[in-house]
Length: 268
Image (tube, rainbow, N blue to C red; front, top):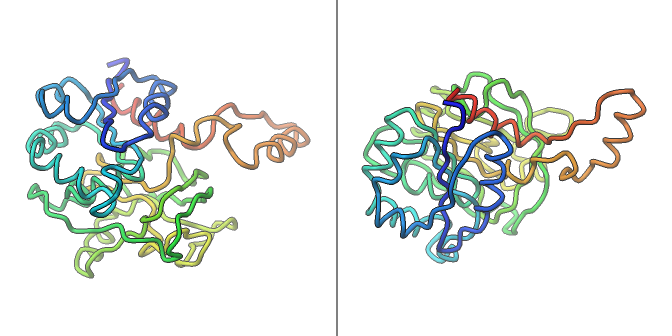
């Protein structure tokens, strides 16, 4: 398959669908932006795609908790279709609000097919919305095709509720099964240890990305679709000059594009 098809959800306050689809297209995919209601009206349409993306935003205004209302709507109307989609070895990504939806929906960590919620994303420890670029260390033992060959990432966060929280038994399971896909680190490459600003939200175990048991469903609080071009980096003028003086090539892409390219490569 040369060009996998991606379905990017929209509607009810999701607001990053355009840049998410753009990122996939930059990586070599093709796709469509589909309103939640249109997918509910024609649930068989989901099977026409290889990748499902739930983008960032503020679905239903976060009025009942970030991602919870949209998760209920998807579970009630598309629960079995989503389980079938994952079982057919296709890929799912939830970014920021989309990650909150996946967690509330029960697809992540998704210990079984009950769509039972085993984790939560709580308010940031700072009790404030955080918008900043962060450094991430990818868990080399995680099996996610989204992160193949990636060691570290420098991409932005923009959220008020990004604090991953799990019950002790669930936390033990995600650690044992290497389902924590990426963790926050500081600029020196050391684990953030829950300390702000390296860990922008106080997330348990410095979790930034979490997968299901297969690794094919990725919930990421940082926004890879906002780190596609090198010139999106906040430090790009300095980085460009440093590279020029060192005689090194100045890249066109930023780290986030790697994630989308991996998704495309998975189907090739």
